Structure formats: structure tokens, C-alpha cells
Image (cartoon, rainbow, N blue to C red):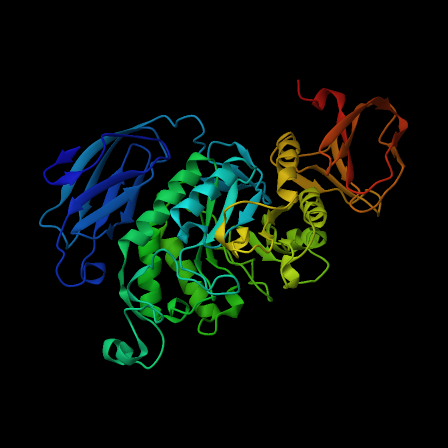
Length: 512
């Protein structure tokens, strides 16, 4: 609807994105000189948000309603000649729209409507900054697999196998190695002798518009967009901006992305590698998120070596890179007890064959870490780093997958989705050479994983009267063998091979 020079739709679904677009002043630097705000009011909520300049004299204000019913809005700011007002209706959520993600039962996740969520994430740092063809191949791969979360950056990345230029930059300017900007005229442009020529107070809207399109398409696939707002792998100067430039960036990113229901905030990838940031800076960014994001999206920060203090109240879940060469998923119990928050292992090493120790484990080992973490009540993440002639590695560029572990995550996810309640917790009374999980809400359900151990049988006893349905699960072959119903003391035969599991369910706990 176009009313008095501003555009908006008259209806939007619950947890959908409602947007008011209008024209405003564009002289000077609109990203700094002018502001725009919106107040959105319904019977059950009133939400105040900041809008943003989207180029070509256009300003936008976005809102995500949490309730159905009639709403009205007021848009105001020094970029406008007068206040803008309007009304719209919020309709029921469409199929597949479960709302924003929340923490439930201390250690787990669920959508706003109560639907349980079991994170099976992957990492593709700058997949959305590749060519159209490669991006489409990534979407195809995501659609064909079980991933329901993907980590990626807003800024381009400079690192091994990532030495080219991205499709776009977040700021107006010219990179140092551009054919337009030579070392001879760089001083003339910038007054500096090295670096890149970017104006950190003038955003390039096209860069962010493209990322928004990718976030929307991920949402259509049921995939959470775990957005890495900052990272240290940089040759353009984005990792060492001044505090006021950082704050301008954070406010812009939140104004643009917060109204998308499938967004998670990751303040940084490997925060401890930043040479020009302190804990005080990270706490300031966190404060900006908490003040400016009215929807309370999930928030985390990711380490390289030293963990951030995940007990900080603004952190909703632990985003962990393992610190030990050998131990990763095995430490989930400890991290749960220490932080009392969901434990997401966003990097437990990647399946692949590159030279780095974090990127050359086998598919069998990555799948083992997935099962081990899941049975300990954590949420593991995937990455793949197989060498190829084009240097297109999934972990950064997306494209296609070449490994074996990803083919088996859907099988694990289905088993997790059959768990009673909202998630698993470790059962510490089990045998020392197994990992046993029970539902967070109680027992009458056991998922027992034997990892690389290879028993040929196991004996069980719970009580004399309860009847238990028993299944043997081959996690690599993705098979489930029904073994029958047992009572009292019983023995379960196993094939004497690694990566096996046993599921034991009280007979009335079975799915019908």
C-alpha cells in the first residue's frame, strides 16, 4: 500500500516481517546525519525500533509482531517532514512458521510456539558473498540435507583458501588491491600509506540487501541464520574500526536484521584473536544488542583459545570451539554444569583433509562427536574442508559437500525429534564405558551410545515389572533393529563394531 509517500502492506503474519518504506532527506551523510524510529502498537504489545537508510533516498523501519490482531504505527525522525501513521492486521502464522527461537529447560531450545528444536548446524563463513551460481548450489545442498542452522559472516574473510575478493563490500570504497586504486594514488585518496580505502560511516546497502535475501531464503528452508557480526580474518580494516564506527555498524545491522525471526547473533568468530578489541568492547556491543533488539534473539560469542565468560547474563547459549586436540564432545557434561546454558559446539573440528589440525578429521570421527555431544545434552556443529582444484571448501564458500558425515545427520535428527520433551541430558549412573542420555524431564527413555567401544552384548536391569522396547541402532549404517520387549534383567546382543547405540523405551512411551 502506498499512502502519502510511504509504502507498507496492510496484513502480515504473526512472527513475519512488517516493513514501512518511505522517502526522506538524503543530503550529507544519511547514515549518520539522520535517524528514523517506529512505534508499533497492538492490544498486547508496544514495540519501539530504529529504522535505517537503504540508499537512494529510501528509509525503512521493520517490525516483527508477536501477536495476532489489529496494530497501528507511528514513524518519525529528523529525516522526515512529518510523522507517518498507519494501521495493519496481523494474521495467524503460516505453516512452518513457529516463531523466534528461545531457550527452554535451561539447556535446550524451542520455537516461540513451543515446537522443540534440535540444532544440527553447519559453518559456511562467507557462502553468501560468492557468485550467484555457487550460492544457488549452496541452497540446493542445504535443501537436500538436515542442517537447520548455518553460521556465516557479514564481513568478507581473508584466510587460507579465502584470498579472493567478495562479491560486495559492506562499505563504500575501494579495496587496496583493486585495479582502480593503485599504490601510487592510494595516498591521494586516503592520506594513508597502506590499507584499504573504505568509508566506515557510509554503508553499501546492496551488500546488506543481498544478505537479507539469503536470510529470507534460509527461513523458507527452516534454517536458522547464525550471523557472525565480527571476525578477525581481515585485510580491509573492518576488524580494527574506531569505537564510534563499530557502534554505528552494530546499530545498522540490528536495525536491518532483527525483524527476521530466524536470526541468531554471534558477536564474533574467535573473539580472542582480535588485536584491537577488549572485553570492554565486547560488553559494549552486547549492551547495544540488548537495548536495540526488542525481540531478544539468541546471543553468543565464539572463541579460538580462551572461552569468553559464558556465564555473563547477556549470553543465551555457549558457542564453543573445542580447546583440546582430542577432547570435544566429551566435555559437554562439564560445560553444562559450569554455565547452565545450552551448549552448542559450533566447531569440534571439520571433516576434511587440509593441512590444519582443525580441518582433517574423518567423517566417522565427526559423526562420533555428533552422537557423543547429543547424548550428553549438547548440540554439535558440522564443517567440511576437503581440498579441491578450485579451492572451494564448504566451510567457507558453500557449494557441494564431498564427505560422509553429513549424509547421516538426518538420521540423528530424527532420533532426537523422537525424544520425549525438549531435549536430552547425561545419565551419570550408566556404565563408565558408554554415554547414556535420558530426557531432561525424566526417565522411562534411554539412549545409550558406545562410541568407538565394541561390545558384543550388554546387560540391563531397571526393575522387575516395567516392560521395555529395545532397539539396536547402527549410527553409521543408519539402521534400527527392533530386538523385542523385555522385563526384569535382560541381555541385548550387539554386533561388536563401533558407533552402535541402544534405545530403550518404556512400552507406553513409544510413538503410536
